[in-house]
Length: 133
Image (cartoon, rainbow, N blue to C red; front, side, top):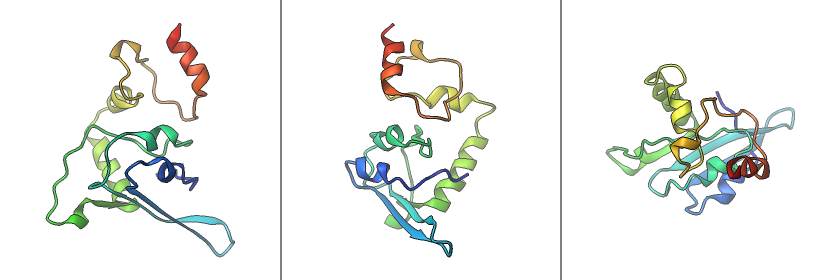
């Protein structure tokens, strides 16, 4: 399911400039996401885009190996990203994937909680206080 709210934070924070977003307007003059794409040949997997997204629309998995016959096979548009995500989750029973991988990069295993990822962004100050105690 598409969650992007077109805030452009992911594109702004990306150091490798691999995210491309095109926003348009529909017949009611409301903002619509016309194009969202990621160029995997440029991505450095820093996860800044994941951390800055206010609606958790992005997920960085541990799948870093891609295969393609040409460069365009490594250019992922919104439709491909959404279909790949459904395929990817089908390989993980229950909440296995969510609990194992959805954590800040570098967080030790002993600090993980058994709960699923929060749907709402957490205030960083509050989270840091929890980690420190």
